[in-house]
Length: 373
Image (cartoon, rainbow, N blue to C red; front, side, top):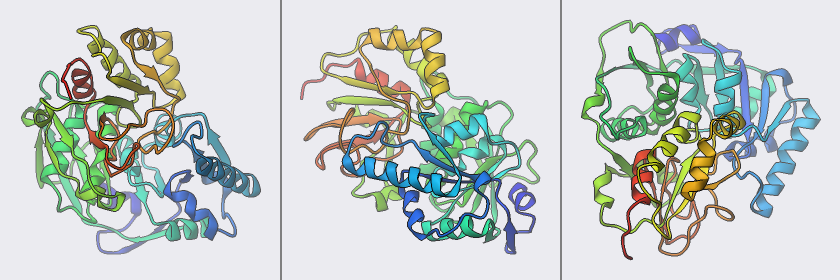
């Protein structure tokens, strides 16, 4: 199994490795800083500000100051204005076979390049940064073969939700995907979503070593949504349903961006769909390019111009999937469709608002409908 090759031990054995990169950002993992007294190898540590960009609250500004001060003290590279840290790392730094330790639940995105992204607790993250090594019991592998093709109007976000909906029993397992015709963007989307199953990590391999445990048939996928849930702690248990359940409900806003919706491929798709209709009066559409490179590419090829002419508001690059205050938040009783993977109460504004994860296509289609409250 590929994960056994990367960790150097068979499943069930204890492996100790020196990660190629370790990542702290301004999300939950920033709490690890309070437990770190030294940094074993600053050259392997990235400290990234990519969530609330630019800072929309005093609390976010304090976190920025904290992580910036930490990186300066220990000589680690501080990254800001690059966009979503994981997306930037995937595009510019991560290579096949590397191991990346993070404190984020979507670190498996690096599996798109046959690298191993591992999410750990803040306590463990602090320890790894101090000693420069990571130890774990090598998990068992679940092999997933991907077959078929997505139908028109269906995307890899829908496939990811479809996979999550049917595989909630992968807690602690490693997921090894195999496919003959998926590009890097599609692999990154699926890998970043896969650990919503509770899996240890996920990655793509070119040649599976055994018969699949699961077959994911893309031709069976329909537009899907992830429903609101009570709290961040319950996000892994959020219900998933067919997007058709929202057909007759008023949607007030849409957000396209982040590591599952802000790539240049996603932005171009949104712009293409915008040519087929008009944005409904009152619908607020926010577009957040994933990285600075995505932003520049969309600006140079006219994608941003099309979206602005359509009526979209262009946000700063970064991960805006949790935003309590500032641009993109929603008000009392409002509904938001987002390509982000968080739908917990209050994650995008008022506690009585509703947030649903959806694909670019579903969001754009919703933005063209006029439905009275």
